[in-house]
Length: 191
Image 1 (cartoon, rainbow, N blue to C red):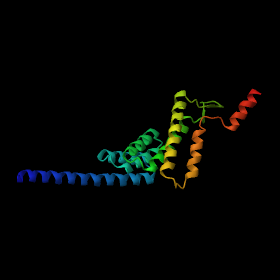
Image 2: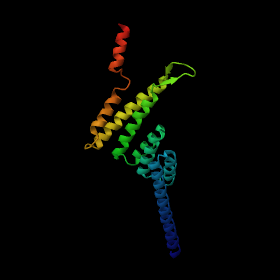
Image 3: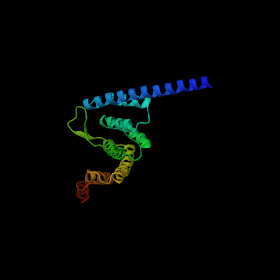
Image 4: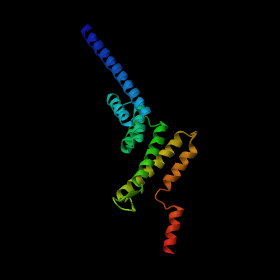
């Protein structure tokens, strides 16, 4: 009986020690990631945060920080995945919904960006073609952004940025609809 108690005690101490070492390593990785974020080195920050999650995938704050770093690095799929994974751990953390909605709206806009591209040795510019697949993905992202931004306002009714968020929701709802200027041009072209 004493032998079994001794073995159980040793195992307990080993588990506690390992957990403490992991917590220290996770904290060090998160601190280093914060330093990289401050310097604008989002790739290095993402690497440290991912290493932190490899050691402890239960910290919702690490998922949130990874999502922010990925958003700043314009790695939209990684950002969305990080926010969604964090939401599984802490579904009532309203910042997940806000940040996810913002990154979804930004990603959708990036997919359908129609900035002109210069043709090599050409004097004119040609508009960038947007595929039907990208348009459909952008529409889905805008719908999800609306849902997440509304959830943010629901979870955080006293949000100081309510008007800004409501304006972003309106912009998402109007996505793909012709603007007044575009409608006028179509009418003039037909007339």
